[in-house]
Every structure is written in structure tokens, then in C-alpha cells.
Length: 121
Image 1 (cartoon, rainbow, N blue to C red):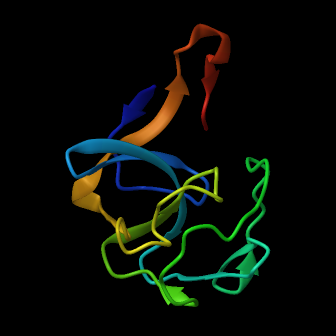
Image 2 (cartoon, helix red, strand yellow):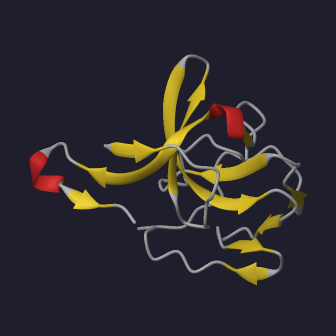
């Protein structure tokens, strides 16, 4: 993958960030001050608007131990993996929201494996 460092993110962007000396890759769902909510079917709402998520193969509520609706704290991003049934992400306090200091960058291009080479934006 190829990433670039920025603090300008849109819903749906894919970011890499540090977590416990590992680099994780998740999708930006909401930014500071936004309210995130989910229903039992896995539909995600940001500021009461249902997200269109064509990148998902299947929706799921997943591993969640936070209370919805959830307001994203200042200087943080709410991120979720695309495999929602098993992804541990901002829906779980073990990872939580991601600070700007943790961000490695916004992913632009996937280059390996070669058959999956594509732009990510």
C-alpha cells in the first residue's frame, strides 16, 4: 500500500494508524464532534444520516462494547473495518477512537499483491 500523511479525512477514506506497536488499517466513519449510531442490522448513521457503504460485502453489528449514539471526542477519528462481523475497531474500547498522532497516513494505492493493484480513493 502507499499512504500519505494528512489531517484531512472524509468519510470512507482508508487510514493506517499505530496501535500497540502495530499498524492497523481501517475506514474513517466519523470525525471529532460527529455522532455515530448503529442499528442491530449493522447500518451506520453519522449525525442521524445513514451512511452509504458500497464497499461492504455484508453489514454486521460486530464486537461492540460502547454505548450508541456515541460522540467522537475532539482530535479523534471513529474508524471501522470492512469485515464488520469480526473487526475490532472504534466500536470496541480495546482500540477506541484514533488520535491524529496515531495516524500513519491515508491510503492511496494498493500495489501488492499485483493482481489486486488499484487506487483506493
